[in-house]
Amino acid sequence: MTFGTVYTFPQNPRAAKAAIAAKYAGVELSIPQFDIGTENKTPEYIAKFPTGQVPAFENDKTNLFESNAIAFYVASQGDAKLLGATKECTAEVLQWLFFISNRIDGPLAQWLYPILGFVPYNKGAYHKAVNDIKGAFTVLNAALLHKTYLVGESITLADIVLGATLSVGFTTVLAPEHVGSYKNLMRYVKTLYAQPQFKDVLGEIVFATSEKKYAPPS
Image (cartoon, rainbow, N blue to C red):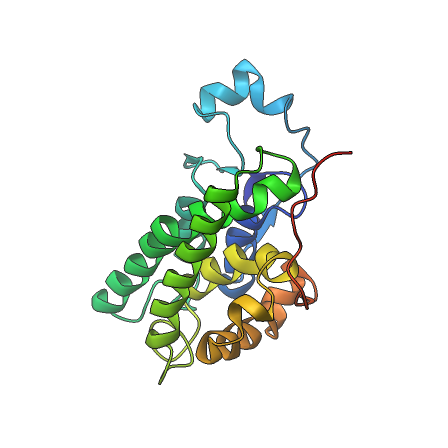
C-alpha cells in the first residue's frame, strides 16, 4: 500500500530526502510524472500547497510542502528509529536538520545555481559561498572525528538529509581541492553513498575530480 504521493521533478535532491527515508522506513511512495512550472501553478495545487513549490507530499491525512517536513513525516514510520532512539537523540537529529538548512543549503545553492543557469554569476557571492561551505564542513569534520554517523550508532534522518543535500555538490563542485582536508567528513559521506538505500535513490555517486566552474554564455 502506498504511504503517500510526492510531487517533484526528476533527480531533485530535496525530494531524495523523503525517498531515502522511505527505503529505510519500509514504506512506499508514489512519485508520478509531474510537469513543473505548469501543474504546480494550478488552483488545485495551490489550494493544497500554498507556496506552489516542490517537492510536496500528500496522503489521506496531511499535505506537506517543505522537504524536511516531508522527510521527517516519512522517517517517523516503521521501526528504523530514523528520528533517534531517545528524545535526546531526536533533538540532536533536529539540531543537524536546522544546521543543514541554515549553514549548507543557501551557500551550496549560491555556488551551484550560476553553473546551472538559475541565477547570474557573482564573484563575491561565489567566494562567500565557498568559505561558508568550508566553515560548515569544519564543524561536521570535527563532529565526525570519533563517530560513524551524526547521531547514535546507526543512520538517522540527519544523515539522510545531509547525504541527499550534498549529493549534487559532490558530483560537480565539491572537488578534492575543496574537501580533501576533511578526512572524517569524506569517510562519512562515502559510507552513506555505499548504502543500498542511498544508491537506490541517488544512483552511484561519482565524485568530482575537479571543480566544475561557471562558464559565461557564449
